[in-house]
Amino acid sequence: MEGTSYAIGAPVIPSFMPASQGVTDDSTTFANRVVNMMFTATSWYFQVAAASVVEDVMVEKLGNSVTPIWAVVSNISFILTNTEPLLEFARPTLHNIVDIGGISVHEPKPLDEKWNSILDLRHRNVLLSFGSVASCKFMPLEMKTAIVETIKSFPDVTFIWKYEEPEDAPFAHGVENLFLSKWTPQNDLLADDRLTVFVTHGGAGSLLESATRGKPMIVVPLFGDQTRNAKLIVKFGLGIMLNKQDLFDSNEMSKAIGEILNDKSYQNAAHRIRDLLANQSSWRERKLLKTVEMVAEFGEMPELRVAGRNLGIIAYYNLDIWLMTAIVLTFVVYLLLLIIRLLFGRFLGSTGRMIKIKTH
Image (cartoon, rainbow, N blue to C red; front, side):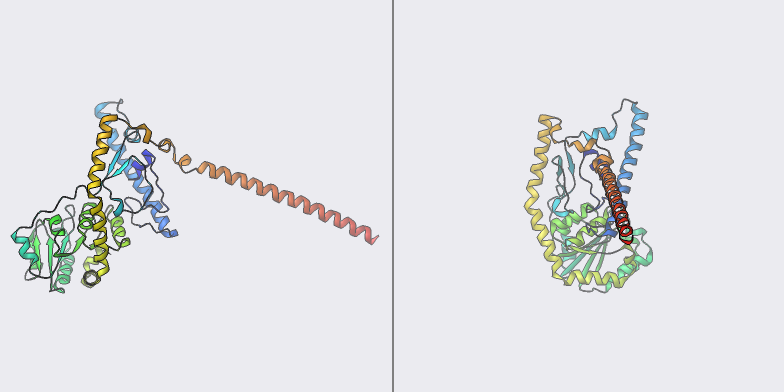
């Protein structure tokens, strides 16, 4: 996040680096850069404010001798991130930032008889899961009804919907190609070749699992970094992004599902990223192990700390230099204009005298 990046001196460049909690991709249009600038500042402020609250509690409980949070962060040896560079907007980084995203994606387990029988019912299968924070049972009835209408329009496709209270879902009664389940073995289902499409909220964990298993996605972001994640999926051709308001529109959902099912480019892109990630899987574990071993053996790593972590915003972005340059250039232009004016005045004066002499 922006607060941590700033504290350790990592580049934060709003012109093309999407904010962690933003709603833009890495497009460099003027409008996109304006919006991303605002979200970058907001994301930075949110993290700094949250850390300030935590620090106040620490001081209250432990006294004023507590080391400030950002002082600890700025001198940290390594930062391990849940980021996979192949599934991220390309960006400059530091040597002490170690990306190990995907290391938490476990090897899939064989599906039991229940899930095997469901996947065998039809040639194509779709998994709907909106995470563990936002409960589908609290969706407006109109939204749930629209989702069911969408499902009914694809009778040759089986839909598995992670729904918290499947026993209390009268809107889904009688829909033969819909199965509601309080819990789903998401990683195991995504790893099965019989699963075709994943409809998700766009959480980082779900995206990593789906990309690792090579499944095209329909992403419906709800909050936080999910819109940014959805933009990433669209950029890489791995899926389609829908607004959560689109869940009220069965036609819009049907259009998206139909496109994913019938356009092989999404599947091809998903398989490509799957193969790329598979090539990196063992390297992530080695990076983690070597990083931890290095810190355990050598302790702090001042060699990897950049001087920029101690700079204020003005010095970090050379705003003082740009200001000084602007002042100097303005002064030079002013002098040039003044000299031109004086020379022009003298020229007019000498020309006037010559005209008077000729007339006399």
